[in-house]
Image (cartoon, rainbow, N blue to C red; front, side):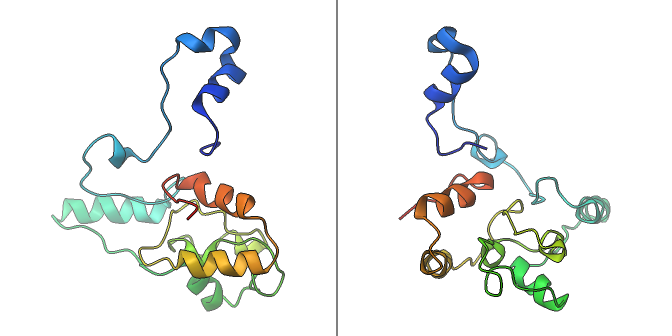
Length: 153
């Protein structure tokens, strides 16, 4: 979860002096290392999506999952908007739905465990969060927690 820190420093913190002999690399999604045919998003994936995927594969197809942000699920459930109404650092506008806005429904901000929605408007979200006086470092750290590929430009 410390995707923005030096691999060398992390290895030294864990292994001490023997860290210099270790070969390490930054974590990343499976598709960075091997070819994948289909991805079920989430950390962990939703049980219903795993079952839907297995059922679809048994029928020779792939499942179709929603392609809108968590915010849509929040509003459909009439949840309080933690970002707008409570000024909390919520990543719901950027994150792939399918979790039924489980965290925001109990007043916990969306941390991004499902990764970005395909058409995430990162620039607008970043501008809004900066306007709300969150530091760019904190915002980028949160965004990279589950998706290290997000850059800070």
